[in-house]
Amino acid sequence: MPSAYRYALYLAPVGAWRELGRQWLGRCEDTGAPVPRAAGTDPRLDEWTRAPRRYGLHATLKAPFRLRHGQNAAALDRAVRAFAVQQEPFGIPLRRESLRGFLAWCIDDKHALSRTNALANAAVADLDAFRAPPEPAELARRQPQHLSPMQRQMLDRWGYPYVFETFTFHITLTGQLDDAAMREAQARLDALENSALQRPMPVNAVSLYVEPEPGADFVVARHYGFDGTTRDGAGARFLQTQDDAQYA
Image (tube, rainbow, N blue to C red):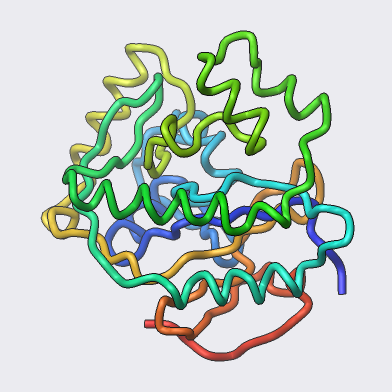
């Protein structure tokens, strides 16, 4: 069975956030297929969402990584299964924010934020044995000269600058926008978001996404429920195992 170019552990939104997020990005992260947008949608939406559309709707727990020499996808699959069943379900209230020049759903509760940070911290550390060290070109793309000393330290140690003390949970909705586009995108989302988004979003699973080959769109390989059940996405062939169980 083939290995993907990169793997990433993400939190896949569920419920109303998934439905709106998929329609907003115009792509289903489970299948990789386009999601039709409503008639009359602003044609600039494709440009606004180009960057997050490639990665699929998600929040990062452990950023994309290549497999370390001597590791394989089947072992990673087993490790994520074991990681997931150690977790307990919880909920996260979300609100839309402007974050470093892009729009995202962020956590609006200190207790939920603490639990999510703990989940991300554990994912970064527990799965790090599978991560190949970044190549010089990968490090250069992070523009280390523009990072804070702490972010540079995290990049050197963990291969990603935004972990542990520098981590900020977010579900990305746009790429970088200028002020005018930011206001227009905000207004468009104001019109689309509804009361269903006011309830906490359940967190009861983590998900492995894969980048099949360099530059390809990311797609879900497998969702891992905290209750031990799983559900496959279109990228499951890159895990070398199959499991037909479902998670709630």
